Image (cartoon, rainbow, N blue to C red; front, side, top):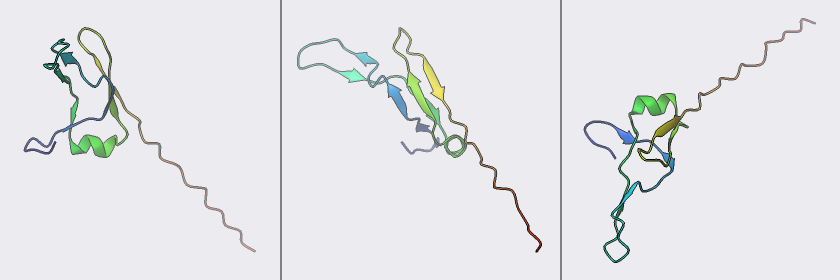
Amino acid sequence: MSNISELDDLRYTRIFFSWSNKRFDNGYITKKLETALINQVWMDMFPKSYANFLRSEHSPIIIEVEIPKFKKGSPFKFCNY
């Protein structure tokens, strides 16, 4: 979803459609009303983040963030023979 606001929809799990017109004939419609918007700075900082939409009356959103862990390099060893 690229536009002038430079916001994108965060990847999500659980609820794919949060609203339906509750018809059981050919006029059945489903839509996803909730969304979590992020920008490129967010994706650069938290590339593995995603939104978790819980099923309840107001569909709360939990943003799961995996903070990157930086590995320390192996210590420098010098043997003077």
